[in-house]
Structures are given as C-alpha cells and as structure tokens.
Amino acid sequence: MKITTKCWIGLAVLAALSPLGLILPERFKAGSAWGEWGAPDMQKLVGYIPQGLEKLSSLWSAPIPDYAFKGWEEKPLASLSLAYILSAVIGILLCVGVVLILGKLLSKE
Amino acid sequence: MHIPDGYLGPATCGVFYVAMLPIWTIASKVVKKTLKIRQVPMLAIGAAFSFIIMMFNVPIPGGTTGHAVGGVLVAILLGPWAACIAITVALVIQALLFGDGGITAIGANCFNMAFVLPFAGYYIYKAVSFKASIDSPRRIFAAGLAGYLGINLAAFFAGVEFGLQPLLHHAANGQSLYCPYGLKVAVPVMLGEHLLVFGWVEAVVTALVVKYLMKQSPEFFAERGESL
Image (cartoon, rainbow over all chains, first blue to last red; front, side, top):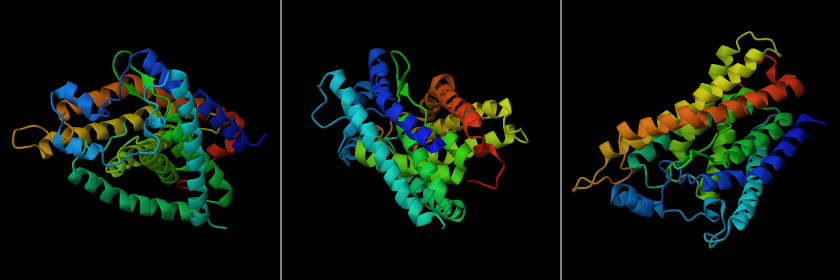
C-alpha cells in the first residue's frame, strides 16, 4: 500500500475518533481553553466584560460554531459527537481541497 | 491557543497581519520553487492532519483544555515553509467556518502556530538529528523534543500577545478593553499548561509518527536541501 493511502486511512480513523476531543474534556469538567472564554464567562472571571471584547467577539458568526450545528447547544453528547465527526470530515475535505488548488497554482511541472 | 476575536486590540491584530504578509509571500515563493506535483497530496494530508489533531482537546481535569498542533511533524516531513502554508490553511478554515480562533486574530494565530511553531521545531529537529543515519533512534528523540519545544515557544508568544493587552488598552475607569490578564498571568499560564501537559502531547504525536514513517517510508528522512 502506498504511504499516502495509509495517511488517508489514518485521517479517516482520526476523524472517527475525534469526539474524544469533546467527550474527555466534558468527562473531566475541564471547561474552555485558557483565553478562549465567551463574553458571559468573562463576567464571571473578572467581574466585567471588557468593552472591546464585547464588541469584537460577535464580529464573525461562523456557520458551524465550535464544531457544532447552530441550535444544537442543548443536544445530548451523542448528537454533539456526530456533529463533531461531520465537522472533522468537512474540515479535512476543505483543507485538502484548498491545498490541492494552492498546489496547482504553486507547483512546477 | 486559538486567540478569539476581542482578546487582542486592533494594533496587535494589525501588527501580526503585517508580520505574516512577507512570511506568507516567501512561503509561497519557496514552495513554488521546490514543491513537486507528486508532493502536493502530502501537503494536503499535512494540512488536514494539523486540522484534525487540533480537534483532540486534552483536558486538565477541573481546569482547562488544550491540544497538539501537529505542525512540527509537518515541518519535519515537508520543510518549515510548506508547513507554514499547510497550518495557515487549517487555521483559516478553523476561524472562518468553525469560529475557532478569531478572524481579527488570524495574523497572530498564524504567527504563533504556522510560523514560530514549525520553524522552531524544524531547526531543533535538524540540529538534534544532525548526521543521524536514516534509521537512527536519535531522529525519534529529536522529533519529540522539537515538538515539545516548538509548541511551547508558540504558547509563550500567545501568552505575550494576551498579556500585552492590559498595557496597551484600557478604558477611562481602568478596566481592560481586550484581554484583561497581563503578562504576569498570561505568560506563566500559557507556558505552564503547555510545559506540563499539551507540550507532551505534541512531543508524543510527533515522535510516534516519525518512528512509524522511518520504518514505512524512510525516503522522508533522506538528506535534502532546505525544505521539501
């Protein structure tokens, strides 16, 4: 088997296992990454929401925020895991697509 | 380590976009000069690998989470300039589509994770594996060390960027406008959590894949020129 084929299989396995990155932090009550809190968490942490942060934090509305579909925030972990896997697949395909286009533009014959 | 929108002021965001422009330009030139068509799929795999490995959030129980970047591995296999492009693609997709990392902070996040991390990692790997034979275990050690130090250096820069904000911007009442934590908090926290936990994840991922590829595909480790 070619090494690239093995790498593609590896990526598929990682995508299937990706919900571990959701379930383990939940299981161990790990909270957000440091410095990646939402504005309401900031209120709890320092007692106020920095004005600039409040303004800029809603600047961009991502189509699949935090690797979950919009309106799925209250769904059970199983649904969130499914959204996580789909996000992984979409992300991998986009990365591959963009690099293939860039590669076409950049590579020499 | 994905700095969201609103944590860095406009000056910091601007400086890092400006800093990244020449880096991205040189990266495309170097890759254009050295990338062969048959290597493009491997570069695509590198970008996808970096994207997916960053989804594996590792918990510090009761505290916080973090993750590996996979960027040192891409730099070891394809060179630091190609890695810069691959990680940038992953970070931009994460910011635009998934809101992971702010769009105003793409410059800063790319500086930390797509520039500092792969370049530091690549040269540490090169130095430690200097003149090692293709099947030498020293390569595995070099890869692990490069992963560990590369991600920690990136975390240090992220900590400095966070920590500078209270110095640069505050409202008339003394409240911070952006990240409220100064250097004395942000740098030790960012660096500490990566030194203790997440750095080891990057080290293990980098070392294990290098170990696997040394057996499966030793041509990756044949001496070649700068990058690719």
